[in-house]
Amino acid sequence: MTEYEILLLLDPELAEEKQADVVARLRDMIEKGGGTFERHDVWGRRKLAYPIDKKEEGVYHLLSFTSSPETLDELSRVLKIDDDVMRHMATRRPEGGPSEPIAVGAAIGDDAETGPADTLEEE
Image (cartoon, rainbow, N blue to C red; front, side):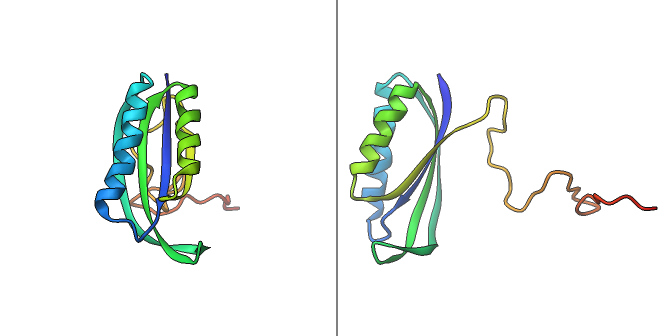
């Protein structure tokens, strides 16, 4: 089994019950395919960089799970034909990588007390 994440962009006009139905349907498909559903994070309503189907906003959901590649293919196929899903992106989580999302704006070498790491050497 491989660890995956799917970022869903749902229609902003969709009721919360329908959003929950989309996530529940995906969860059922993952579990029927022999995988495990680990986490569901609702990122909420966000402004889009460009309009999609004349919509300026979307509702983001992040799903974390383990499954076989065949199950992921089936999930992607179903998401492509679902009218409630504006966009989706599936990624494989790196093995041994963090299970929690990395904070936005955090850079490698940053230290909370001293600030960003200096990359230039002093002469």
